[in-house]
Figure 1 (cartoon, rainbow, N blue to C red):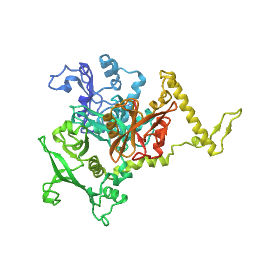
Figure 2: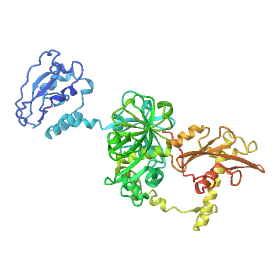
Figure 3: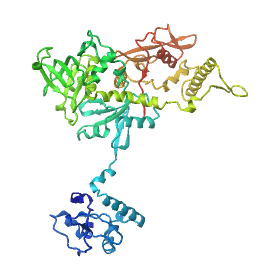
Figure 4: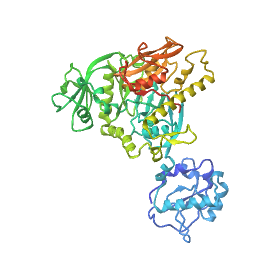
Length: 560
C-alpha cells in the first residue's frame, strides 16, 4: 500500500473536530497484513507545530476479521466514522458535524465504496479528479451579453459552438466560431476547433479582461476553398514548383506536407522593442519560424534574424493597431507566447494591406497546425455525409392542396413550385399587415408601411453607423459575399448595402423610387426595381447585377 500521508491535510476537518476523532495507522513494512485491534486512549492535543497530531489522536489500524473488512492502511484522518468499530464509533459520533452524519443506507454505500478503493489499492489523490470533471465558462456575443455554462474540462471549441448552436436553434453552417479576446492588450484570435477551451482560459493572467466570444467567422476555412485568393503569387515560394506556376492543389499540399518547404516573404512594419517607433523590414516565414533580413531582401542565413517559432506561440489580430500601438496602418497582427500575457512579450507587426495581413496570419496558422487544420475543415462535412440533415420523414414530404373540399397531392412539379411562391407572397402580406397593426403607420399615411417586414430579417441591422458595419463584416470574415443592410445615416429615407469583395468593404446606396403611388427600391438608378428589400436581397443572391459579387453570407447577431 502506497504512502498516503501526503493527502492528510486535504481530508482534515475544520475546528476542533479532529481533536476528538481518531486515525487509523498501519504497519507500512507489511501492507498486506493487518495487526490485531488495539485501542490507544485519547491524548491531549499536541503542540501546534505538529498540525497533523494537533488535529487528532492516533489509533492503530484495525481489521474486523469476522466480516473480512479491510480499512485504509495509511495514516490519514478518517472522514467516514461509520467504518469504525462500535467502540470507536460511539466515542466519536457525538463530535461529528451535521453534514458528516449519514443514515444507514448512505453509510453502507460509502463503506462499500471505500472497500472497493482499498481492494484495488487506489489512493485518494487518484480519485480526486472525479470531483473536478466540469468547469464553468462564460461566453459573450456581439452585444456583450453573456451566458455561463458548466462544461466538461475536455470540451473543445467545436464542442462549445455545437452547444450554443443547439441552445439558440441556429443553423449550423460550420462557420460558428469561438474567439479569444484579450481586452487590455487589444488583441483577438480564432480558437481552433480542436483546442481545449479550459487550456485557453488557464493561460490568462489575473490582470486585464479576457473573454470568449461566440460569433460567425466565414473566413475560418475559406483558404481551403480558394487558396489563391489568400496567398498572392508574389508572396509565396514553393520548392520544386513547375515553371513557376501554382495551382490550388500544389499550394495546399505545400502547406500541409512536412516534406515540402513553402515560404512566405514580403515587407512588414515591425515595432522596435521598448520604443514607439516602427520600422519596415523584409520578413521570411518558414516552417522553422519567422525571420527578418537585416540587409534588404537578402535571404542568406547570415542576414536572417530569428523572430519566433510557433509551437509555443499564437498569432493574434490587433483590434486598434493605430490607436493603441501607434501602427502606421490598421492591418496589424502580433505573435504572442502562449503562457504569457504581458504586453512586453508581444512581437508587433503591421502590413500595408488587408490581403497581405491575411496571407501572413493564414500561413502562420497552417504552419502551426498543419494537417490538424485540414481535419477540422473536413470533419463536419464527413459527419453530414454520414448523417444527412433530412430525416426519413422529411424525405417523404409531398406538396398538398387544401383549397377544395378534399385535399389532394400536387404531383406536377411546376404547379407545386407556383403554389410555394404564392404561399410565400401570402405570408409576406400577412406579416406586413401584422406589423402595420402593431404601431406602424397605415398604408394611407406612408407607402413604405407594407415594407416593414425587412426589419425582421437577420441581414438587416437598422440604424448602425458605417464604421460599425465595417467592424461587423470584418469580425465575421472578409471573404466575397459577406453583407448586411442598414439604414442610411446621411439620408434617412434610403438604405445602404454593405458588401465585402476582394477583402475590401464597399457600400451601395439603395434608392427608393415612387411611381403611380407605388414604392420601389433600386441599386442602379431604377433600371432594376424591386417592391421590397427582401426581393432585392433574394435577386442579388442569385444574380451579381451591378454588384462586384453575389450576396452570399449575411452578418447575423444572436442573443445568447
